[in-house]
Amino acid sequence: MVKAGKSITKPLIIWIMVVTLVLTSIPWTEAKPKVFAHGKENHEEEEKEKKKKKNNNVERLHEIKEKRTSHSKTYQNSDLTETTELYSNPIFYQEEPKGQWLGVNNNVSEDIHDEAEKEI
Image (cartoon, rainbow, N blue to C red; front, side, top):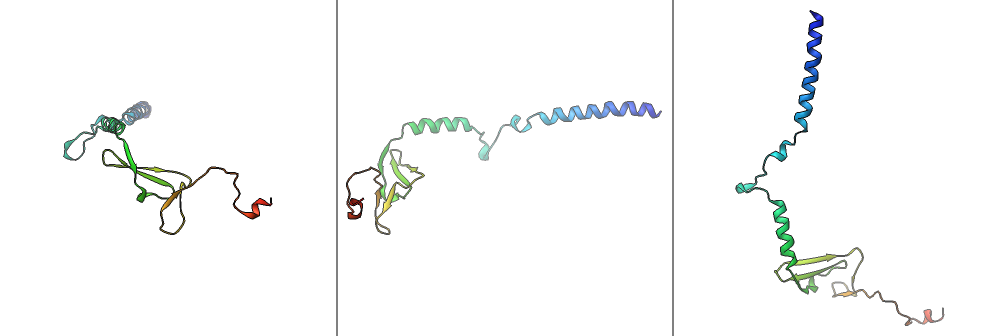
């Protein structure tokens, strides 16, 4: 009688483990449609495509100088949005506090304006 119990338990445990592994490998969340407020389904891919197409038709009209920072430029777009370009290094500087942001000139020149540098 004891041997018969052992022979049933081992296959039963193996069968339960197999069923558990199969059921946990099924992506249950992806099988359900994603529904948001107001009953709309999630069409993320379609929205991304629309944004890409929309952004391709946008033109930069002019820079908004009031929104300059030391590391950024902001532009007014033709669709009344704004685009900000960020830089890792400073591209503007201020000569006086709260003054106008001026562009950094990275051009190298051989002109010497300091008398101490002329002696070297």
